Length: 325
Image 1: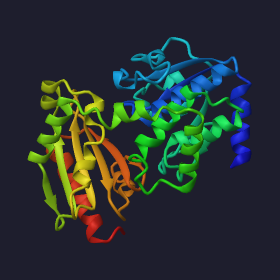
Image 2 (image 1 turned 180 degrees about the vertical axis):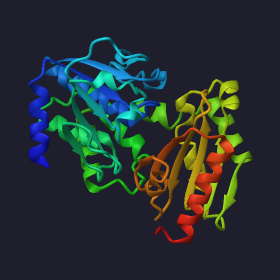
Image 3 (image 1 turned 180 degrees about the horizontal axis):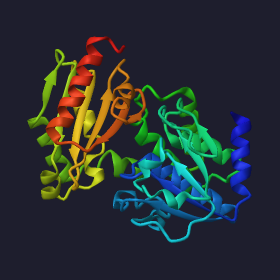
């Protein structure tokens, strides 16, 4: 794998201009990967354009260059090399036009178990606690100078994608990377203030709604709730208001699998899945074309809220009844 990592690093460094794309509804890990890589490449004199389908929340404005991420429609011209970060598959970017990738060379840097290895160059390490851990290794291979700004971006991804280092995905290597980033000057105070001590009123209202609409089955091992578009629109909720809400369901005593059903403006239902100790929610999501990790996965369905709940709750109950088979 180290040989592959070196090959990818050499390939990227030979380019004069690249595009870096992160997944839609961006979180700290995908943005941390994107921004850290951009800063590292610009150290080497490589021109970078950063893309995301959605508007980036001001919650991330403490990370250098976050305002340079181009949101919305794709530019008319893109560089020959497009680097996907934290994307298990290409559709997760939110851009579905096939022609935009014609004649492009795709580099795929990810940590999802369900990654489809869609790039000409793939560095996918699912044992890493976060994609920013993989990005740290790539930047090492590029002989990057780890500035405080790069280190803060990477530490943000490590912290947020591991539940502040509580999830099973965390390994001794994850802590070693985190320790190195601290030595390089990562600003943990800004990360703490923006992610762990900054709950919006909108998020609090959503939390109340989730608790008021909780349902349980399978002797309390499965629990779920919902967020309709009308509510999200009324509260003018943004993606950062919704981030992490599913954990409040998973954290309930006796719950093994938590489900959160969120409706968007077009009526599509996004299903988030989390498990606590043994259930493989990636396997459940795969039944409906989704994927992710063993303990965290997701899927989107073009069905009604009621149908989405029926399908996923039945699949989860069946999975739990069979003990994961």
